[in-house]
Amino acid sequence: MLAVLAVALAAAVTASARAWSRPDARGASRWIAAQPVGPPGSWSLAFADEFDGAAVDGTRWHTCFWWATTTCSIESNGELELYTADEVSVAGGAAHLRAERRDKVAWNGTTYRYTSGMVMTGGRKGVKAPGFTFTYGYAEARVRVPRGKGLWPAFWLLPASYNSRPEIDVMEILGDSTDVQRMNFHYVRRDGTRGDAGLAWRGPDFSTGWHTFGVDWRPDALVWYVDGVERWRFSDPSVIPSAPMYLLANLAVGGTWPGSPDAGTVFPSTYDVDYVRVWKSTGAPAPATTLVPAAATWRYRDDGRDAGTAWRAPSFDDAAWKSG
Image (tube, rainbow, N blue to C red; front, side, top):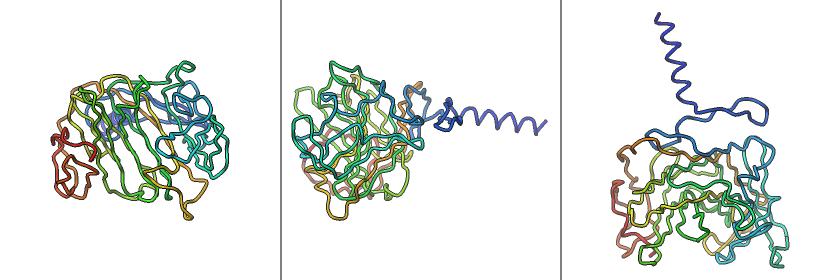
């Protein structure tokens, strides 16, 4: 009887740890966990791409920004890359966004010296409907980032309205400081003015293996997780978005923030994405219990008084934080 009970319990645990399965590129069944990596509570899976096929799913993903059909870049950031579909591939159960040093003529006739890859679910305005948008939930991605000055991988959210704000940066890592995870929120206040808040958290060297990054988007808070551990939260509900947003993952090259690649930057370099998932909460959120480590460094605060060395409870009022 005890043996039978043990087998039954083991089966129940196994079943509860899995949401559903799908065949991978080799035809084998690949299970997806029934819970996201990090936030407690009850969840249901709203979106998942495990990148088990031979190419990205074009009904879900677009390989440029919403304003472009074939090639694109963000010129306002001074970025050096030209995003193009041939730098996006799927192999080995992961998507690969590749940056290369090569000349390519862009949509505007400009010759770019670097090409790179990106994917987003926002579609092409007026041409291709969004592949996926959502309002509130937990967005997570398991990724492996490249190392090298001038490389700038990111996982982020933008509004389905195609405005530039609000912007939720789940993960930004600069290639010359791959042990620092940057979490940022760029928003619009009710009076129309813009605000910015962010935290730079020093962890392991994220370029040496796979890591999971996520954000829990709630009506009253944004909560960032790294490898299942809460690392920052923003809790001013007056500016937290309440309209649909879409997903993006990209590998930028150069720009005013990361700077240009140097002689030590290896090309091609690849930003690998094992999966992207979005979960919807099916119960009340659990109370916050974690603390931001004392080693965390704030990127900016209104008056510049904080040196980023104090411990802070998750209930800290982040409304006072903005671009400094």
